[in-house]
Image (cartoon, rainbow, N blue to C red; front, side, top):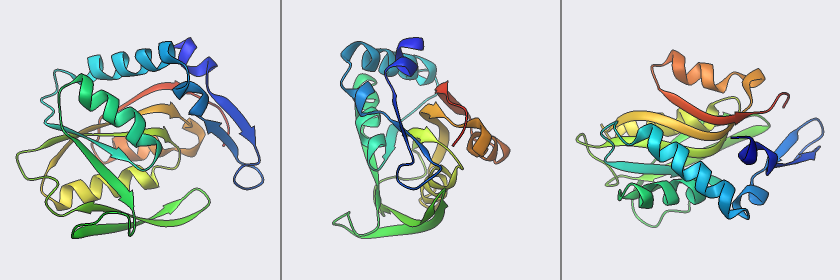
Length: 176
């Protein structure tokens, strides 16, 4: 996993002062590191009865679609408000540095679905918890969440685990 962490660039004071932005675009451009991400994630979840993978916009689309393809499962996008063309349900949430809304198509999932939620990073947990809520509102089951990066000081992973969600992370960075 060190190759994964070593390929992630840190950009200080982005998007606002005091934030250490963990830029996964450098990871995405490294085929060996991305293969490791997909293999580690798929192997961790392959026996969990998944029926689909949901990726959170935007960076969760990259990893989530690769994992879904690797596992031969459908990919479900969870998008920012106003980006999906069909009827949606929405969930408001707090970001580390603001507020936002996520949406999912009303017919994306059903009660027989077992979903893995994928994103690049878990910080405060707001985006992930909003995604969990959307999936539960469609009566599907959240099998777990997978992230490339954990920022443990911000407590998002613990929040997910406290509501009964299994969490996988591939590396951690200190700070914000």
